[in-house]
Image (cartoon, rainbow, N blue to C red):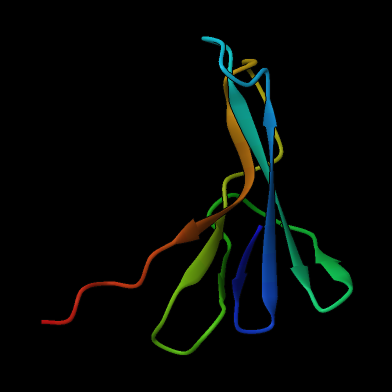
Length: 77
């Protein structure tokens, strides 16, 4: 579980420790789950800070990564 501001990312690991290990990220804002609408959708947890990116719901392989993923903030210039 990762918290950023009022958001919480919960990641389930499937087939842990195997070549088929995959991940599904679920994003919550307070008590409500944030449902991704389209691949590439971005939710800014903090202005100019960390963002969450929706990777899509499809899982074409056991080892696929789907759902939400934390994207770290861009480095300062």
